[in-house]
Image (cartoon, rainbow, N blue to C red; front, side):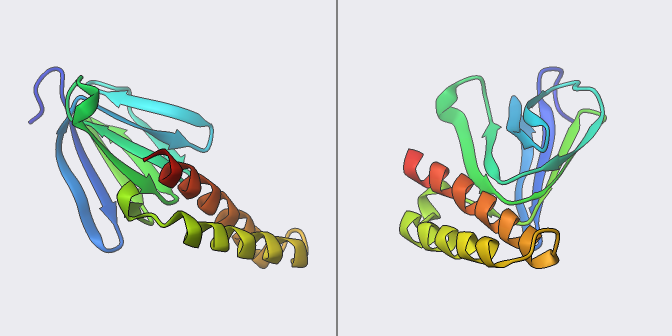
Length: 140
């Protein structure tokens, strides 16, 4: 069990477990804004959007594990945080040029799709993912 100032966390994708262990803090973005989770955080469930997932192993900034996260969910309960996301990619594995191509493709599909359709909504999600991942790739 996590110590008084630590939080148990796990990050899961459809491919399997990405992380399991104790953290000082977990930081990410939900559909309503940025969130930081520390020990004894109030229970919550939140929808996650493509953004950078930061796992702060300690208070030292150099002890932070970073991922580009896809859409998903965050559950916090009983001093545990569970992150269920479509993907978790280390920033060094992102290819900014490929992401720019994906962004162009999503923008083209968005322009061609009728608003309110499933194709339009998928293009919006793909565009947001590409934009978020490009930002992460260019920051590393």
